[in-house]
Image (cartoon, rainbow, N blue to C red; front, top):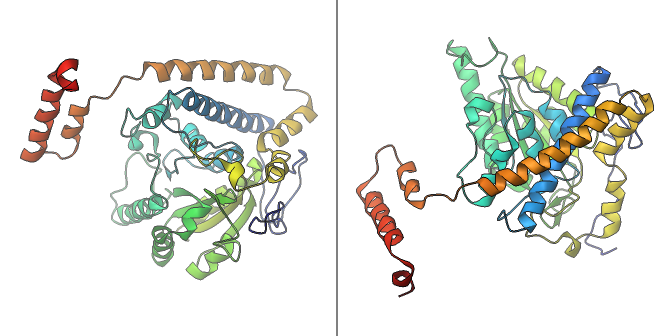
Length: 378
C-alpha cells in the first residue's frame, strides 16, 4: 500500500454498534433500539430506495442528462437512521450528498434533479419540508444550522414559536457534514457558537474516510469525536453503516437538545464507496482493497440479513424490488421533462425590487434571445 494511504480497517473499539456487519443484533450500554419488525422493514425500504435514487442519478449524469452527481453509495445507514430520528417540526441542514435525508423529509426525489441539471436554483421549499437546500460550500450549512437553532431558542424564549413546530421548547436542529468540513473555519465557528449558547443542534459528521482525495488521517491526528471535548459538548462515535445504532444515537442527541442541554457531536464512521462526484476518479488515490473491505460491511446487506433470518418478509421484499424499479423509471422520465431555464427570469430573483442595472442586463438577454441563428453566428 502507498505510504500516504491509511490502513484499510479503521479503529472500531469505541463505536456504538447494535447490528453487526453480518446482520446479528448486539447490545450496547449507551444505546437502545426498540423498534418493531415493521420499523426495521421501513428503514430497509428507505435505504433501498435511497440507493436507487443515487444509482439513477449517477446513470443520468453518465448519459449526459445531469451536469454533475454526488454519489451517496455506502452512506445510506447514517442518513436514514439519523433522519428517521427527527420529528416533523425539526429542521435539517444537509450536504449535497445527503439524498437519504432529503428523501426522509418528504421531498419528491425528482426535485433533486433540477439542481444538478443546471435548470433550477434549488428544488423545494425548505419551510414546507423542514429540510434546507443542499449546501455546496463545504461547512457553510453548519453556520446556517447554528443560526437557525439560535432562532429556535429565541423564539421559544419570547413565546413566538413557529406554529408548525412541536409545541414548547421541543424543536431541534440537525446539520450534516463530511469529514472534510472539520477543516473549515465555518464549522469550527458553528461548533463554538452552538456550545457557548447551549443551542438545540446536533452535528452529524459523515466520516466517509476521504475529503475528496484527502484521507481522514491526514487532517485529523485524533478521531473527530474527541474534538467535541474542546468545544464543551458531548461526542459519540457510531458505526455509520449500522442504521439501528445511528437512529438510537441520534434520538438520544435530539432529546438532549430538546431538553435544553445543548449540542452534541456525532461521528458516524462510514465509507464513500463511489467517487466524490462524477467528475472524480477515486482509483487515483485509494486502493481497491479498501473499497472491498467496506463493501463487505454494506449497510443495506446487514439489515437484509436480519430480515431474512425472520423469514416472514418475502412478499414485502419482492414488492420493494418492484417499487425500486418504478422509482428508477419515474426519475428517468422526470429528468427528461425538466424544462430549460429562462435566463431572463433570473434577474427577477435577485432583489425584491429589480435595480436599474439588472433591468438593463435583462433587456440585453431578451434582445440577444430575439436574434436568429445567423445573427448570433456573426
